[in-house]
Amino acid sequence: MKFFVSLWLLLAPISGVPLQGNVTTQSTTTFDQRILQVEEGSLAGTLLDPDSKPVSGALITVSRRSTNPLAKYTSYTDGRGRFYFSQIAVGKYDIGVESSDPWLKDTSTVVTVRHSQRTDVRIVLELNKDCDKSA
Image 1 (cartoon, helix red, strand yellow):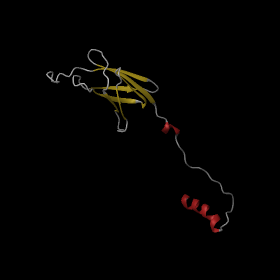
Image 2 (cartoon, helix red, strand yellow):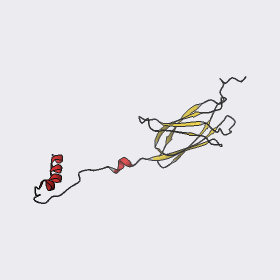
Image 3 (tube, rainbow, N blue to C red):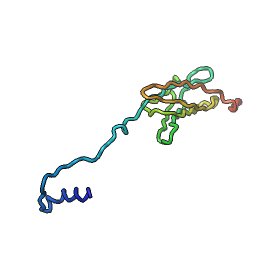
Image 4 (spheres, helix red, strand yellow):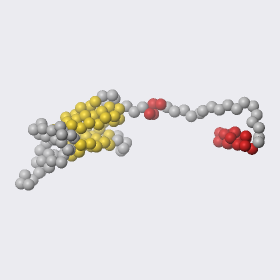
């Protein structure tokens, strides 16, 4: 019915049918601003080898532990073994670490990102005991 009335109001001046009475418009669209508000935090970390030396060039994958498969972030550690993710939604995340060094074992851990806070994590990789030492 709204469509028909709106269409008639638009076509009435064209068709020559005079509009009678007062015509008022009212917006019936409501929008909840809370939908746009995403609580965010940040995640910073350092990746170290068993001797507490920084591991550079490792792939860091951060995946949210929820039903949203789109919340996945990747980065590489810098020369000091550091990585940083800013403005990520609050929640629990799996951090996956893939080192390019075959002597270091890949690992993963779980962290919780909180609203307006920086979550710091220190990850120490273990030696890969399955690595062929003769190579």
